Image (cartoon, rainbow, N blue to C red; front, side):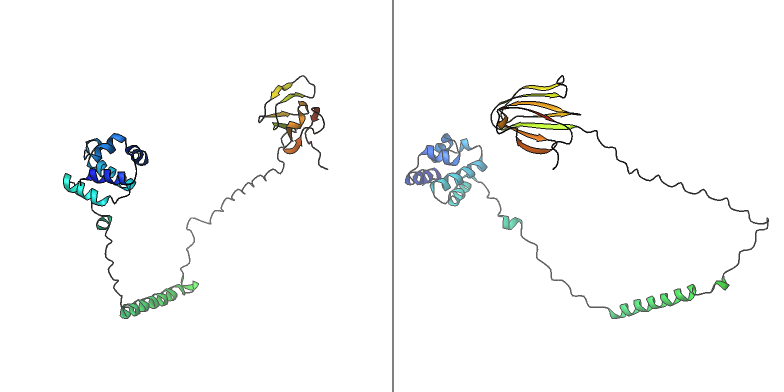
Length: 251
């Protein structure tokens, strides 16, 4: 049987349709049908044809290699060399064992000892052997101008400027929609007034005091100056609150 007949027979024996093989291999149905009729023109070249043969053979449960070899022989395709032939490891040459050269080692040691002795003989001469510098014929030596004393660096300032106090409040709507009004201590500066949708957050900052009116209070979590206070209220649906810098007080 030809390559196509072998694949078609194996597919029928496996109880598969062309559509099922196409879906399993991601190869378009016309190409599968063409290969079963030994028409490889739709594959796009020998390289892709060999790949399709392998994929379809595995899908229908047969060994693809004999079919690929038959395709190569019929179409004059030279099979690629095996990875083993390409990447044959280089033979490891045995390391040559080195025989120590004792004569050279002893000669080097003698040179080191002699160098050490000569160095100490030269360096050990007394100060009497050193020549005394003659006085300058131009007269007494001029006094050296005193060097200016180094200016001490200014010590780092121990006073760190502190940020002005302020109050910061964050509202998180965690359970439904809540109506919120946020103003300053006078009530004239309105930071926000409207609905806070579920999952939304709002943050307000004031230098002196923040005043809040919160509806659906048990569905809004409060965070004041970085501290989580939990729900705005667990008793009333509408609450009026105010916070200043330093709140909540640490007890």
